[in-house]
Image (cartoon, rainbow, N blue to C red; front, side):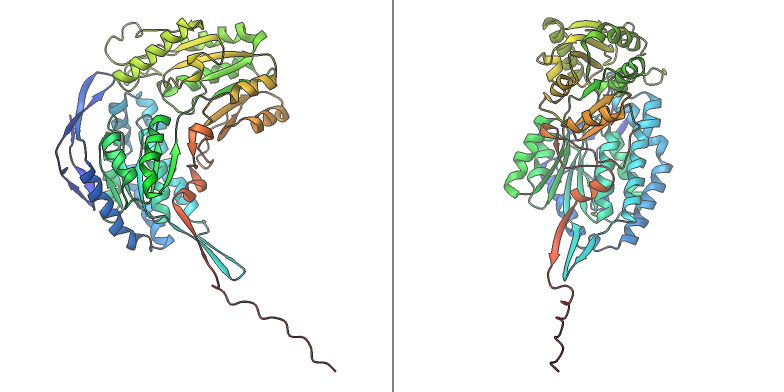
Length: 485
């Protein structure tokens, strides 16, 4: 049992001002794996004031000093890599291999990306006699989700540290163990007191206090669109910058010339990965209507061959995060059946032999139209819906017919066609033919999927303000006309 009842404020582990404990449930066992404290607005105030005091000094550190700091953080992360993977498996039921090869790997990947960008980033530029500088925005409030816990922490903290900001982090109270390991890593690396602060808690209390606190200059939030709206509302009175990475219902367009065996297989696996708990999952597969039966046969075979089981069993899918999430997924599956979608694989209930744990059957619906609930709402579970189209123009229209715009996917063998379709899709990131992830590519959404961008160089801009210093350089002397002869 883990006991993480303290917060990390001003470089020290401290007790909460008003103790209030929460059990953290292991979703594979439905049993408590440990406890954390739920913070209050007073704890946020202490952390924000510590971050404000630290900002004066840390914001003036040199690039070389911050490079050295990130290098120390990376070294400490490598020492704790196995601990990080184990924490993620325990807090969210992630299969051991997924936790080791993907979840924990994303943390160190973002640190290394930020380090690489920092070494070459231009923080100032002289334009004529005016100096344009990019300076750290100040104290940052960071609110992160449970589904890729250390990925979302690292992709915010690493660029914020790199550019000279100080911060207060509220990780998800559902999956807080990895945040504790992360904080221990930063402490061991010698991050100066007050630069990084950790306060656990729930959204309505600690999240709201972070978003509204007058000493916090910007807030970066990842989570549901509903919660993102509340963050923006709470931040509005202080006119702070709000960066949001929110939900998605990403289209996956298989063009008529696609390799259907390969594309359907990749699409199904993309949805099932992490038990469907990825905001950019390709959850709406769009296929030519005349190929629907062929596609559903492939999708059924892939879904039914996807193993589900305990994190240490070697299964591809673990449980979903909580009883609440399991119930929401079940309700949406049943809604799909009621609305007339064809259930191709999976369905309601738990997989056979897995009565304990929040396990969901890998589910595929076919013959879906885009006004069905399962095509509109973000299910956040291992559920794929397959829709038919008559023309590529219709496929693009269906793909864009969503309030979200985080990601999109296109498969086809004609590069000119796939690129033209990508250009017409209203999404922050478009993946062609199952391209590998790129940690330097900007990540963020259009429409209700948020605003701003994370990852790589683009992440730095979220944590910087632009200042113009006029008259910084002497004006060039005016040419003197030659004397008359």
